[in-house]
Each structure stands twice: as structure tokens, then as C-alpha cells.
Image 1 (cartoon, rainbow, N blue to C red):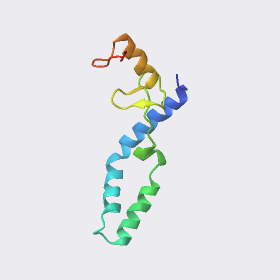
Image 2: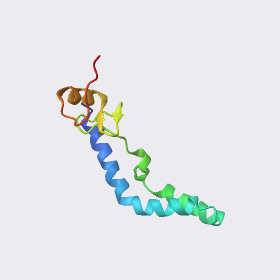
Image 3: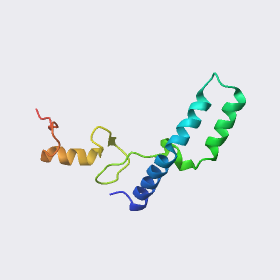
Length: 101
């Protein structure tokens, strides 16, 4: 089980990303648009820099839904490798079977 503070910090980041999502996307579009003037693009990048750091979507860490583990995370199942194996062995994940030969 991951530290509760790490899990809560990640949840706060998710809320902040959701709050600034529209503003971040608008500034990102301006900054990446090569048809615009360089000064406009620079101003957009400076405004992006003024936003809180944790408003950037890349700061969110994928974590296991059950344990909060951040490493060895399977996106398809939203679980860590350890929980995937445990639940798979118990037959609790539809379509997942343990191979044996």
C-alpha cells in the first residue's frame, strides 16, 4: 500500500488539472500554432508558465486503484502487476486467465 499522502497529493493534482484544463488547452493551442506571430506564441508560453505547476496534465501519476502503487501499472485494468496477478488467480477479472502448460 502506498503512502496515503502520496495518493492524496495525486488526487489534488487531478483536481487542479481539471480546474485549469480549458485555460491550459487554449494557451497550448496558441503556443503550438506556427501560423501565429512569434510574440503571441511567446506570450502564451509565459502565461502557461504562470499557471500552477500541478495544473500540467503530465504531473499526474498513474496509480493502482486498489493499493495506490505507482509502478508496474497496467492501464487497461488500472491495477498494479501485483493486484492484477492476485485478482487474476482468483478469477475476478473477466477474460483474464492464468496460463499453465
